[in-house]
View (cartoon, rainbow, N blue to C red):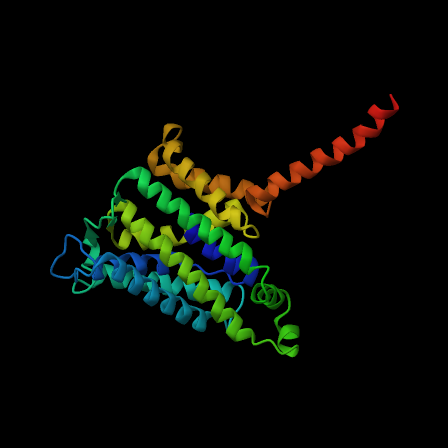
Length: 295
């Protein structure tokens, strides 16, 4: 979930494009793993080797994300959000009503992580390190990319696209490339998600799932790559332990309340709140240092 939210953080924080279809891209990747690989639905699944299924799932998901970008980059603000939300809802109903390819509301089950050599990624410890490695690769890729010429140009387009266009930068190409890279991150997250859950269904990509990725990204901080993972940790902890305090059906009330508090007190998320307290502590420490030296 952190990787999927990281793709939204990259688009929104560095590209100024808030997309609600990142979970849709991840869901497509999950479905493609089930269709190309092996699952309980042998009549639909093609039974390809896991590495070939992963390769084609990522490739098609990146193309799909680029097409979403092509449709949405001509708009801004609420219009972009509504277009990407409409695409996500349309894909949800497509998977729910199509039985020949997506197996309808039942989806696919028994989608296991692969065994590579002597490493069985169905083992929780091995899978943990696989997910951790992918998360670190995604994090460092974003950290490198935002300092590269492409990332700096993308941030300039976020701040003033008209001026960047007058300087000779292709605004449309940069935005499409950003959607393609974000789609790559989301597709990896979708593959890990289907291997973790061993199943995928329309419930994995419904409207609630689309909104959850936005909540995770905002909770952690849209301007920080690390914020996606901080937000994911916070969301999962609340999801697992809030039911000890409130009824399971009222989890959305809890996460909504936490979301409103974070946005109200720190628009830059939990990391922004941490940086604010850290700055105040450093200022107070610096102010108290001369007094201690005089005494």
